[in-house]
Amino acid sequence: MKNYEKSGDTFDYINGVTAVSSGDFVKISGVIGCAVNDIAASATGPVMVLGRFKDVAKTTGETWDQGTAIYWKDSTSKFTTTSSGNTLAGRSTSVEIAGATTGSLSLNLM
Image 1: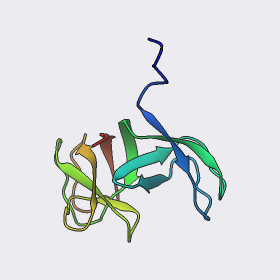
Image 2: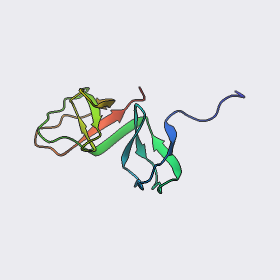
Image 3: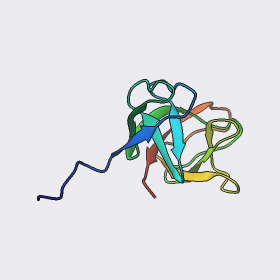
Image 4: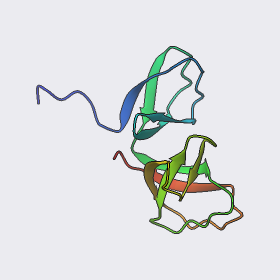
């Protein structure tokens, strides 16, 4: 195909003024992505917007069931099951107890 550019699992993230480390999650408008590499302040780098991720920071006190809708909470830089005021990120891929501080999820470009 002459108009094919690349697969849709990454975005080129135009970073602001704060450096981003590989594995950090960022919000690009209404899409959540995970930095593939370190991205220096004022630089551009790839972020994954599709795929499964483990050991992501979750809001303590919440129980996650497989398939539960998961949201990104800007104020804490953690994932949550609370939709109000947060950005839909994907679905839980594991069962997590309320006391767990991490979980697994599948990012879905929405």
